[in-house]
Image: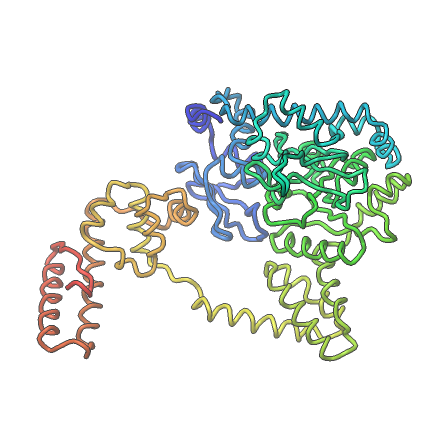
Length: 555
């Protein structure tokens, strides 16, 4: 882990304007800077950078944070990765705490076992012949550290000689126990493919049988260090090319990755026998590349491609889909020396959104009016997941495929927007008095106690959510950053704060007076008492006094 003192030294050297302007063009605007937001499409700049507060905030999509957060979001990096990148850029030497003993032990176990598997491959002609027949070069075996897992007993003996405790090997998914209580190695008579995190840490294995085992491929089981829904095979080898080229190819198998790298497509990765998940997206989106989904053209492949393309397009990623027909996958095409054909396919993939719409429409018989209606509903449902601009762009495409008038889609879309507006109660209102008090508390947290001494949370009728964030001291929350960066929201001095608190209370008690007067559920005696109490408070407030806040239920 990076020591906190190093992080603080880096933060002290960073300038938000300098960092952000290294990625996007900033223009001076008042005391700060503005730009078109790099995180969502827009024509009117709503992305603000404040050199005084050293933060950024987009009032279009809501993102915000400091310089480190910007680099994390823009390049899709983890917090430590962003710190390390900025430290290199600003020539800051970082210091690290020592690795935990558990991690050191875990790392050694995996690296030793991987070396054991690699040495076993050298002495197993059957495994080497299989790889040769699949077209895998010796250089690729070395690059991807491909190995071979022998009989269970041999692997167990190796781990014993390495003093690996059975409990540890079991926790890491390397061994298991059968129904008779006998231990066995997870990987038996299989070609092994070590699986690394994006940072190059070995955390598991994939295995391809070369025996008669019914499970052709297996992965390490779910454990405290291995989760296949969070990992992409080959990413640690591909990430440099992905960032340089601005493109990532996502395939379905280990050999697809290895063979495509061998053919020069070194920006290729694969999911680990699972569908693309939301957890994969942050890895895929690093550096904002074009995403090419390279899937089999059979029914299962098309279904997986549609789910993946839908998810990526909904999240604003761009790219396309390439389906491999006639039973050939990317690895087969490389073996058949069809590299030029692959290159042509990857240069002209079917755009993600077009692919999704076509798959939706093609799943119905639109010659049947009822089926056509269902296709129409499903296509509109998908369009609604996209940004307003993309919805506008693709209405005509949907209409053309369904052979209907585009006005039908426009009318449906307008009804949807109206329903959304009704559901949210229209545009969110703003109360500048509440916002000023919140901004004052953000910039001067010491005033919070004074505010709470006078008023309660209920007083903030419009911005109660933002005030609750202040009360929790979550000052780095995007909603509070947005308030802090807005010049039109005034920060109050001591006298103005007292005046504003008094006006809040006058408003509160005036509303309480109205409610109590109209309330028929309380007795006349209690009503007279409440009205007298409220009026007394109002008289004091109007004379300039500050009185203690009392809610309607406690007066």
